[in-house]
Image (cartoon, rainbow, N blue to C red; front, top):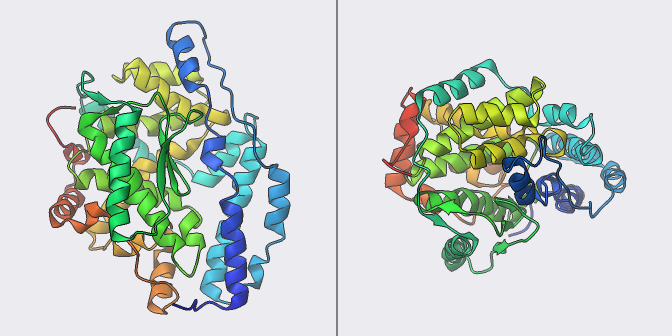
Length: 388
């Protein structure tokens, strides 16, 4: 199918998308020695952990010069120009954050990128921690190799639907935990996943993040593959919805989302790493879990991203409760705030139907679970499964 955008608009879109893919924002903000620092901290050998970060592959100043050279204001289509302008501003903030990594300026930049924490969100997080008891921590766990096998099986399922899709999963020594970077699912070699949550995590990472990456990268507007401005919040909300759909949103997972919010609030209020860690332990988190959450929030000088998981989930549940349909969100990676623009571009024929539909959304039983969750006013009723 021919691209309906003008050659000039295509060129600018491609330039911005290629530049966005040329740096690894979250990966470059994440410590490479989290497991070693965890051991020292939990053993009492360090009061405040010191983390080591990978060398940046590209100089943020050079990337910023490349960004400034892209003539986003020259885009002819009004809607596309507005979307790309917002993306350029987001990329400016990201590059400023990479440049300010581990400095006093980093936290303020993070707050600009991810927004303030509404009082209502804090109240919901505190309610979850007060009313939801910690789940059973003595559960069977999959190691990194076992989880990789599940993830690759899910990728193979989608490859059976569309053989030419370019997505992958790998164990990466310099990665910690599980994360998607562009078209790759990266698994830290020390990662362990509770067996009862393994499918939920696969649906979150592969069935949501990688599927929308595939769909976005096949759009005439290529930036939908790397993500429009603010896409993280809606993407993470969709990811958690997938966990609800497959019936594996456990008590520990819901508490984790709430704990991330309170840890971000603590960070903004000046809490040290130790302060935030101790607060989470007092809320019933295990030392290992408390360390992971605190590390995620304090990395690189204070990353407030983790508050968006619960915020994005609540926003999508409210959207569904009011009769909203999720279909358009699988066209690519974008924020709820841009839904009207995306639907307009789809109606005008500038965007195409998605290449893939997430397995969890294609199942009527799983969609019914999500609908039921959206209509329930008690956040604690999201918990599924008797044990963890």
